[in-house]
Image 1: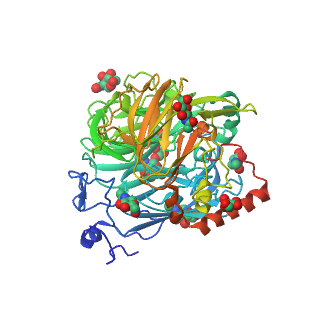
Image 2: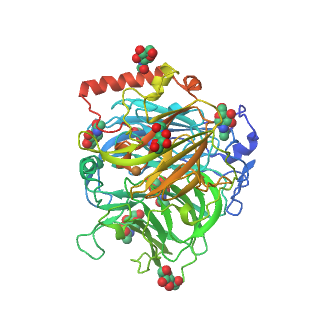
Image 3: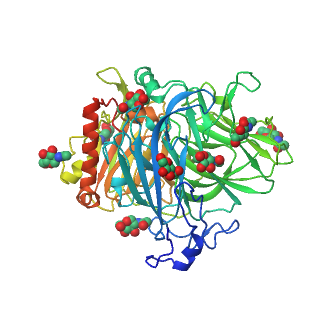
Length: 574
Ligand SMILES: *[C@@H]1O[C@H](CO)[C@@H](O)[C@H](O)[C@H]1NC(C)=O
Ligand SMILES: *[C@@H]1O[C@H](CO)[C@@H](O)[C@H](O)[C@H]1NC(C)=O
Ligand SMILES: *[C@@H]1O[C@H](CO)[C@@H](O)[C@H](O)[C@H]1NC(C)=O
Ligand SMILES: *[C@@H]1O[C@H](CO)[C@@H](O)[C@H](O)[C@H]1NC(C)=O
Ligand SMILES: *[C@@H]1O[C@H](CO)[C@@H](O)[C@H](O)[C@H]1NC(C)=O
Ligand SMILES: *[C@@H]1O[C@H](CO)[C@@H](O)[C@H](O)[C@H]1NC(C)=O
Ligand SMILES: *[C@@H]1O[C@H](CO)[C@@H](O)[C@H](O)[C@H]1NC(C)=O
Ligand SMILES: *[C@@H]1O[C@H](CO)[C@@H](O)[C@H](O)[C@H]1NC(C)=O
Ligand SMILES: [Cu+2]
């Protein structure tokens, strides 16, 4: 494939690109990561003719490079902790293949649904990706597309206008938590130096029954206790020393004096983790896809859907040979029968032994990092006063069928797989959503939106917005009031933030990206139980972004499949 074409537009000199982009021969030999001229272990702030000081919210390289990936979903039998069960996977593995791109590349992902046993539809969402003017590629069933029917394919195309660490996952039913997810690494500058990039590390919870099987319990008697957790797709089950222990632990070797970048993703269905490596300090350099002023901590809170990029300096070889790496589900909001044994091993040199190290002390809680640390976006931005605002109370209750549903102002989301909002808007940009309470029409461009969510229930929720990074203006316990102090000068900026238990979260974003965007709780059960709203942003500009016949063809294929198989939608649709 030719990268150094003469047709490259934008600010980059073709020569600096030619030297920096490796050749990409076939999709099976994935290019792990490119480097850019000027970007070395001691100058990570540089990125070709750009740098960490570039305001990435308005400016992105135009590399002229397209990274094309083919992903195939299949029904599989897996045993990531040694206990066998059925699951669904991307290209046969959990996590699926990592997608790599450089800042400014165009990413094309072809997704083929070969879920012929489970007969599930699918859609793939690129979590945290801005989808700048590319809303139809957001991959949310019933919102931006009909599910891709078994045997069918969908192609997603977007430009990497951000850089850092994120993930893709299914946005159809509970499929993301059956194994349909993988990492995304977008190479770019960083706010601190490191020697080696270790890539994505997923933290997941896991059970020996499928999420679909457990949903019956979740919907009738509340969140089930899960059996285990996985560190990047593996763990043991059973106690150390027990003859019947199964599986193996994630492990990796450190070289004394080297520093390592690790890209953490919480892909759990219902677990908030505290992450730590015994006797090591973590330097945090990005929250979600936002580079931040580096800060250090020993125990990191990571909520579902959140990501943190951390740097670990290997400086403990004198202390011990092997150290525990821990992901501990917090009992304040997670139920796991193996909570103290979701561990990996970090070892120095060649000697891997069972660690005897002691973990850092912590107070069990499901807090956000932002509640205990000063998390400062590196590119400083301030928030103007509200031009549109709303307050929504989150509650839970039983619906008329006696099933748990989550409500925002008495509405629980229910959208139809066969009638995505985007198709409705494409068909008629004046579609009236005023009677649909979980749809907010934001018609005016470049307005500051303030959105408050509060709850009197002692359950925290990770709130995720599509198509934008939001500003976290306030987050605390109790109720929001007009006298609540809002941080408008360079507040934390990200795409997933915790609504504290019995508390409130005040978010802000600008209407600078036309499209139909979902905002929802990232607890898998709650997504399925309707804890979501959608924003129809700048309806009049949306149709121009849509490939109407492609959207309609996908829906026709889905409808013919669903009618033929008698598919019944039992959840919120997203
Ligand atoms: C995924 O599998 C398909 C075949 O089903 C293959 O063509 C493709 O290259 C694989 N993709 C990656 C990213 O490994
Ligand atoms: C997003 O798209 C708009 C419209 O094409 C463009 O003006 C803007 O520069 C893009 N943003 C980035 C960061 O590239
Ligand atoms: C998806 O597949 C799972 C596993 O076979 C099944 O339990 C579930 O009902 C399917 N969901 C839909 C909507 O087809
Ligand atoms: C985690 O798994 C993904 C997918 O297999 C892989 O790309 C990545 O390198 C792994 N991370 C680590 C730290 O080994
Ligand atoms: C370390 O990881 C390897 C696979 O990379 C695995 O075979 C081995 O069993 C692991 N060690 C432990 C102690 O779990
Ligand atoms: C390692 O960490 C534990 C727990 O924080 C602490 O008790 C111990 O003293 C540390 N060991 C060394 C050698 O620093
Ligand atoms: C949601 O409820 C709050 C509090 O009762 C109210 O102020 C707000 O107007 C409601 N929003 C909508 C869209 O109904
Ligand atoms: C498109 O709009 C027409 C008229 O407003 C309506 O009859 C039809 O059902 C709509 N189709 C879709 C797919 O929304
Ligand atoms: Cu929730």
